[in-house]
Amino acid sequence: MFRGCPKFCILGRNTLYNDSYLTWQAKPVILALYHRRFIHSVPSKTSNAAHLAQLAERKERERHIIHLVEKRVQLRERLIAESLQTSEGDFNVNHVDRIKMSKFVKELEPLMEPWEKWKSTVKALEESAPLLQDPDQSLRAMAEEESKSLQNTLDKLLQEVFPPILIPSSPTAEVSALVELKAGAGGEEASLFVADLLRMYLRYVDVWGPDISCRGADMNRGGNRGWKATILSQTSGASGTSKESYKEVVLEVKGRGAYDTFRWETGVHRVQRVPATEASGRMHTSAVAVVVLPLTEESRAEASLLTFEVDEKDVKLEVMRARGAGGQHVNKTESAVRLTHLPTGITVSMQDSRSQHTNKQYAWKILRSRLFDLKLREDAERNRDTRRTLVKGMDRSDKIRTYNFVQDRVTDHRTGFTTMNLSHILEGEGLERVVNACRKRHEEDIMVGLLEGSVENE
View 1 (tube, rainbow, N blue to C red):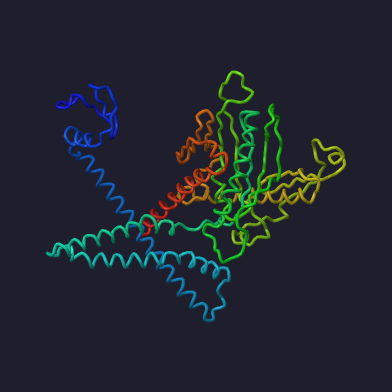
View 2 (tube, rainbow, N blue to C red):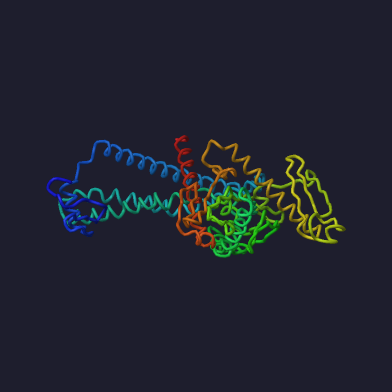
């Protein structure tokens, strides 16, 4: 016990324990006086040095952000000048290059207004500096208040406005998603959890699809609003209960922003719960593998912008009779389709429909998605030493998330996000919080990469 205060000891902020009366009391005023008298200490040289280092690091980061913004503004002005020169009769300019130039100029347009506000605020701050030394106290107080307000404006521009604008738009912003769910270790429990995840994703599409698909979109243009989910194929699993279970499900989610949102679900999802058939009440651990692929279609303009296509000459088509239960349809109809991409060896088989044409259409859709995913991963592998990879940290062998039913807990192991409301996540509504944490982490990595590149180019 501290000398001079024998009866009180600290158990937490605003809480005291009185050993004379043995009662809990919340006395913030007494605690504040106690803290000031008995525990107050002078900051050490180490803490001061750490604080100064943090301030220096922050100032350096802010300097690099302003340098990067200034370079982008100058680049936009140069591109506009070049486009005006070429539009005066230079017909030798590539049409694709002209479109890319116009698109890039439009992407930088939101940067102009904050940049002008930054320059005017800096100028106002410089003009108010002499007034801080004015002998008139009232005038000096007004100058201090104005200077504080201007500094807050600059801090907001640096920390909240500039970073989101500097992050380049995703090349797959318009791409739909193909979500594959496969039961892993755990047998029957894994198959049951595939059904739980499928329901969660379907609910997520209904609840959040309309909002996410409109983010960053040009509202003056026509087009779909929201997402549309379609189950392309499913393989039922054996279950000792009345609940649905699947060994494998392929889900198509069409709409703007679907792939950029669902790609954070790629990985191993671990579930820990007590099965309904477990007599002793022991908790079992099962796993479901989720693979999210970019869905491209030849009829969409976005596919051409991504410069990705599959040559039909490289694909071997085979038709055969469907296997499994199905009666005369299985025995007499050659409706099953198998596509093999010869250069990569990727094979896709489809027999869910009784129509060969429908099976072929779905098989082509899955094959294009897998080849596009392969291309993205190869591009990311070439840039693995940078922070601007498209699928950074998305190794499919990684355990990305744990669903613990006993503790009512969901933990995402990539971001450290944890919530004690598992049902809210599985209902689809709370999943956006998990996805948003991954999205923010990814944007922070991109921003760090941009700043590092800015330092190298100085």
